[in-house]
Amino acid sequence: MQFHELLEIVRQEPVFDTGLLLAGPVDQKQVRQQLSRWVKTGKIYQLRRGLYSLAPPYQKAPPHPFLVANRMVRASYASLQSALAHYGLIPEAVPVTTSVTTGRPGRWETPLGVFEFQHVQPGLFFGYDSIPLTGGQSAFVARPEKALLDLVYLTPGSDDPYYLGELRLQNLERLDLQALDEMAARAGKAKLRRAAAIIAGLRAEEAAEYEDL
Image (cartoon, rainbow, N blue to C red; front, side):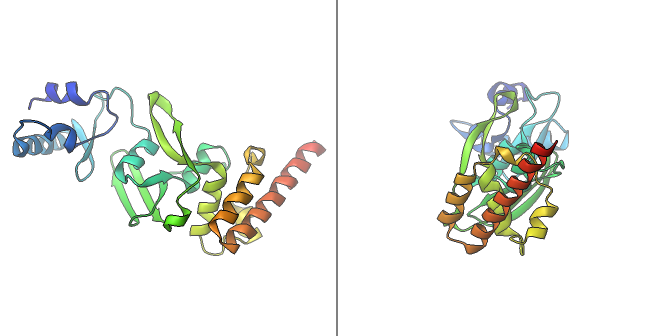
């Protein structure tokens, strides 16, 4: 396979796996050798075993970190601080793309960024949607309410008012408090129900501050 042939196959794909290239009557060993050479010469990036993306300037559009994360671990969705920053609920930019999965936790440092996956029980794997992203891409991302609950669930002591205050949550009018309560109840964790009540209080305080301006 020549590089121009690779471009014809994957140019429309933000990321691609070897399965896309090994279908049909091809020399699988040769394809893998070529991929290794193109990684070494900087034409493509290897994100993890069997998963790649084109490097600039060959990309049609830069892969969105949420899409990359979804493809790195199939049974996952972007959540925690990454989703909260995406929705404008926390002020800081987040250097690591964080996701949750029912599989093993893991962390990968790649040319496209750092990706971290935290484990949740299967019963907590809900509350996410496929949302549109830049460049015509899409990915599974936690709803704002579930991103908060995932963070609380995975962080020791996070149902404490001090911890939740230190998050410097903002734009809380974007939260659906009924959905927050329903998700906390569905999870069946007292810790999440306590956190939901505290977050509702923070939203009321934020609304009162705006009324006083």
